Image 1 (spheres, rainbow, N blue to C red):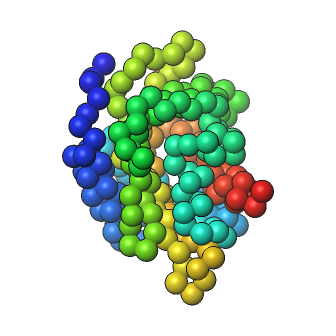
Image 2 (image 1 turned 90 degrees about the vertical axis):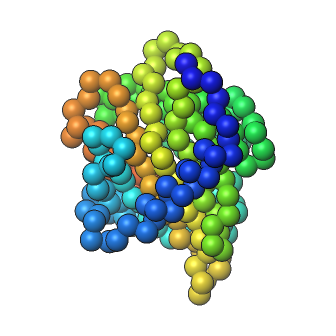
Length: 207
Protein backbone atom coordinates (compact mmCIF):
# COMPACT_ATOMS: atom_id res chain seq x y z
CA UNK A 1 0.00 0.00 0.00
CA UNK A 2 1.43 3.36 -1.02
CA UNK A 3 1.42 6.37 1.34
CA UNK A 4 -0.88 9.25 0.42
CA UNK A 5 0.72 11.52 -2.19
CA UNK A 6 1.42 15.22 -1.83
CA UNK A 7 -1.88 16.65 -3.17
CA UNK A 8 -0.62 19.85 -4.86
CA UNK A 9 1.65 18.33 -7.57
CA UNK A 10 -0.79 15.45 -8.15
CA UNK A 11 -3.69 17.89 -8.62
CA UNK A 12 -1.66 20.02 -11.04
CA UNK A 13 -0.53 17.01 -13.10
CA UNK A 14 -4.07 15.62 -13.18
CA UNK A 15 -5.55 18.91 -14.37
CA UNK A 16 -2.93 19.23 -17.13
CA UNK A 17 -3.63 15.66 -18.31
CA UNK A 18 -7.39 16.30 -18.53
CA UNK A 19 -6.90 19.59 -20.38
CA UNK A 20 -4.72 17.69 -22.88
CA UNK A 21 -7.48 15.08 -23.39
CA UNK A 22 -9.93 17.93 -23.91
CA UNK A 23 -7.84 19.22 -26.83
CA UNK A 24 -7.68 15.89 -28.74
CA UNK A 25 -9.05 16.42 -32.26
CA UNK A 26 -12.43 14.99 -33.32
CA UNK A 27 -10.78 12.75 -35.92
CA UNK A 28 -9.12 10.60 -33.24
CA UNK A 29 -12.44 9.56 -31.65
CA UNK A 30 -14.82 6.80 -32.78
CA UNK A 31 -18.50 6.86 -31.77
CA UNK A 32 -19.30 4.05 -29.30
CA UNK A 33 -22.89 4.94 -28.35
CA UNK A 34 -25.47 7.66 -29.00
CA UNK A 35 -28.60 8.42 -26.96
CA UNK A 36 -30.92 11.42 -26.72
CA UNK A 37 -28.96 12.60 -23.66
CA UNK A 38 -25.33 12.06 -24.69
CA UNK A 39 -22.83 10.79 -27.24
CA UNK A 40 -20.00 8.49 -26.17
CA UNK A 41 -16.76 8.13 -28.16
CA UNK A 42 -13.63 6.10 -27.53
CA UNK A 43 -9.97 5.90 -28.55
CA UNK A 44 -7.10 3.67 -27.39
CA UNK A 45 -5.82 4.78 -23.99
CA UNK A 46 -2.21 5.91 -23.54
CA UNK A 47 -2.31 4.64 -19.95
CA UNK A 48 -3.33 0.98 -20.30
CA UNK A 49 -4.49 -1.56 -22.89
CA UNK A 50 -8.15 -0.45 -22.83
CA UNK A 51 -9.91 2.67 -24.08
CA UNK A 52 -10.20 6.30 -23.12
CA UNK A 53 -13.90 7.20 -23.36
CA UNK A 54 -15.29 10.66 -24.03
CA UNK A 55 -18.92 11.49 -23.24
CA UNK A 56 -20.69 14.75 -24.02
CA UNK A 57 -24.17 16.18 -23.65
CA UNK A 58 -26.04 19.37 -22.77
CA UNK A 59 -27.53 19.45 -19.26
CA UNK A 60 -30.26 21.90 -18.31
CA UNK A 61 -28.82 23.49 -15.16
CA UNK A 62 -26.09 25.81 -13.94
CA UNK A 63 -22.50 24.59 -13.80
CA UNK A 64 -22.01 24.71 -10.02
CA UNK A 65 -25.09 22.64 -9.27
CA UNK A 66 -24.17 20.00 -11.87
CA UNK A 67 -20.62 19.63 -10.53
CA UNK A 68 -21.92 19.44 -6.94
CA UNK A 69 -23.91 16.37 -8.04
CA UNK A 70 -20.87 14.73 -9.70
CA UNK A 71 -17.98 15.32 -7.32
CA UNK A 72 -17.58 13.45 -3.99
CA UNK A 73 -20.28 14.57 -1.59
CA UNK A 74 -23.81 13.92 -0.37
CA UNK A 75 -25.59 14.11 -3.75
CA UNK A 76 -23.69 11.54 -5.82
CA UNK A 77 -24.76 8.43 -3.94
CA UNK A 78 -28.44 9.45 -4.11
CA UNK A 79 -28.70 9.43 -7.90
CA UNK A 80 -25.82 7.41 -9.43
CA UNK A 81 -27.38 3.99 -10.01
CA UNK A 82 -23.98 2.28 -10.37
CA UNK A 83 -22.51 3.55 -7.08
CA UNK A 84 -23.39 1.54 -3.95
CA UNK A 85 -21.26 3.26 -1.27
CA UNK A 86 -18.95 6.25 -0.85
CA UNK A 87 -16.66 7.30 2.00
CA UNK A 88 -14.39 10.33 2.15
CA UNK A 89 -11.16 8.89 3.60
CA UNK A 90 -9.04 12.08 3.70
CA UNK A 91 -9.78 15.75 3.01
CA UNK A 92 -6.88 18.03 2.05
CA UNK A 93 -8.87 21.16 1.21
CA UNK A 94 -12.50 21.84 0.39
CA UNK A 95 -11.92 20.91 -3.27
CA UNK A 96 -9.46 18.03 -2.79
CA UNK A 97 -9.94 14.62 -1.11
CA UNK A 98 -9.39 10.86 -1.21
CA UNK A 99 -12.57 8.80 -1.45
CA UNK A 100 -13.39 5.11 -1.46
CA UNK A 101 -16.47 3.96 -3.35
CA UNK A 102 -18.01 0.73 -4.55
CA UNK A 103 -20.00 -0.08 -7.68
CA UNK A 104 -22.71 -2.66 -8.36
CA UNK A 105 -22.22 -5.74 -10.50
CA UNK A 106 -22.97 -5.23 -14.21
CA UNK A 107 -24.10 -7.29 -17.21
CA UNK A 108 -25.87 -9.89 -15.09
CA UNK A 109 -22.85 -9.93 -12.77
CA UNK A 110 -20.37 -10.91 -15.50
CA UNK A 111 -18.66 -7.83 -14.06
CA UNK A 112 -18.64 -8.34 -10.29
CA UNK A 113 -18.88 -5.44 -7.79
CA UNK A 114 -15.81 -3.19 -7.85
CA UNK A 115 -14.10 -0.97 -5.29
CA UNK A 116 -12.06 2.16 -6.10
CA UNK A 117 -9.93 4.52 -4.01
CA UNK A 118 -9.58 7.82 -5.87
CA UNK A 119 -7.85 11.14 -5.37
CA UNK A 120 -10.43 13.77 -6.38
CA UNK A 121 -9.84 17.43 -7.25
CA UNK A 122 -12.23 20.17 -8.38
CA UNK A 123 -10.99 23.42 -9.91
CA UNK A 124 -12.09 26.24 -12.18
CA UNK A 125 -11.82 25.84 -15.95
CA UNK A 126 -12.57 28.70 -18.36
CA UNK A 127 -16.07 29.93 -17.35
CA UNK A 128 -16.92 26.66 -15.62
CA UNK A 129 -15.46 23.84 -13.55
CA UNK A 130 -13.38 20.69 -13.91
CA UNK A 131 -13.74 17.85 -11.42
CA UNK A 132 -11.16 15.12 -11.94
CA UNK A 133 -9.68 12.04 -10.30
CA UNK A 134 -7.17 9.21 -10.40
CA UNK A 135 -7.01 5.97 -8.43
CA UNK A 136 -4.50 5.37 -5.64
CA UNK A 137 -3.11 2.13 -4.24
CA UNK A 138 -4.31 2.97 -0.75
CA UNK A 139 -6.32 1.20 1.96
CA UNK A 140 -7.22 -2.46 2.37
CA UNK A 141 -9.43 -4.07 -0.29
CA UNK A 142 -12.82 -5.04 1.13
CA UNK A 143 -13.87 -8.68 0.90
CA UNK A 144 -16.18 -9.60 -2.04
CA UNK A 145 -14.90 -6.71 -4.18
CA UNK A 146 -12.33 -6.49 -6.97
CA UNK A 147 -10.17 -3.35 -6.71
CA UNK A 148 -10.49 -1.41 -9.97
CA UNK A 149 -8.27 1.45 -11.11
CA UNK A 150 -9.28 4.76 -12.67
CA UNK A 151 -6.56 6.22 -14.86
CA UNK A 152 -6.82 10.05 -15.15
CA UNK A 153 -10.49 10.91 -15.60
CA UNK A 154 -12.69 13.95 -15.17
CA UNK A 155 -15.69 16.08 -16.11
CA UNK A 156 -15.58 19.53 -17.71
CA UNK A 157 -18.73 21.57 -17.16
CA UNK A 158 -19.09 24.97 -18.84
CA UNK A 159 -22.16 27.19 -19.36
CA UNK A 160 -23.47 27.52 -22.90
CA UNK A 161 -22.74 31.06 -24.05
CA UNK A 162 -26.14 31.64 -25.65
CA UNK A 163 -28.07 29.80 -22.91
CA UNK A 164 -26.53 30.31 -19.43
CA UNK A 165 -29.12 28.05 -17.77
CA UNK A 166 -27.72 25.11 -19.75
CA UNK A 167 -24.23 23.59 -19.47
CA UNK A 168 -22.08 21.47 -21.76
CA UNK A 169 -20.86 18.47 -19.76
CA UNK A 170 -17.89 16.56 -21.21
CA UNK A 171 -16.37 13.55 -19.45
CA UNK A 172 -13.17 11.57 -19.99
CA UNK A 173 -13.13 8.13 -18.37
CA UNK A 174 -10.58 5.30 -18.56
CA UNK A 175 -11.39 2.65 -16.01
CA UNK A 176 -9.32 -0.52 -15.65
CA UNK A 177 -11.85 -2.90 -14.13
CA UNK A 178 -9.23 -5.64 -13.57
CA UNK A 179 -10.12 -9.27 -13.00
CA UNK A 180 -10.59 -11.77 -15.85
CA UNK A 181 -13.04 -9.97 -18.12
CA UNK A 182 -13.68 -10.20 -21.87
CA UNK A 183 -12.87 -6.83 -23.48
CA UNK A 184 -16.22 -6.83 -25.31
CA UNK A 185 -18.07 -6.97 -21.97
CA UNK A 186 -16.01 -4.06 -20.63
CA UNK A 187 -16.68 -1.97 -23.77
CA UNK A 188 -20.44 -2.61 -23.61
CA UNK A 189 -20.56 -1.78 -19.91
CA UNK A 190 -18.52 1.42 -20.20
CA UNK A 191 -20.54 2.88 -23.09
CA UNK A 192 -23.87 2.08 -21.41
CA UNK A 193 -22.71 3.33 -18.01
CA UNK A 194 -21.67 6.70 -19.45
CA UNK A 195 -24.92 7.15 -21.39
CA UNK A 196 -26.96 6.22 -18.29
CA UNK A 197 -24.88 8.65 -16.21
CA UNK A 198 -26.37 11.56 -18.18
CA UNK A 199 -29.98 10.38 -17.97
CA UNK A 200 -29.66 9.65 -14.21
CA UNK A 201 -27.99 13.02 -13.60
CA UNK A 202 -30.71 14.91 -15.50
CA UNK A 203 -33.45 13.20 -13.46
CA UNK A 204 -31.64 14.06 -10.21
CA UNK A 205 -31.25 17.73 -11.14
CA UNK A 206 -34.99 18.03 -11.83
CA UNK A 207 -35.96 16.87 -8.32
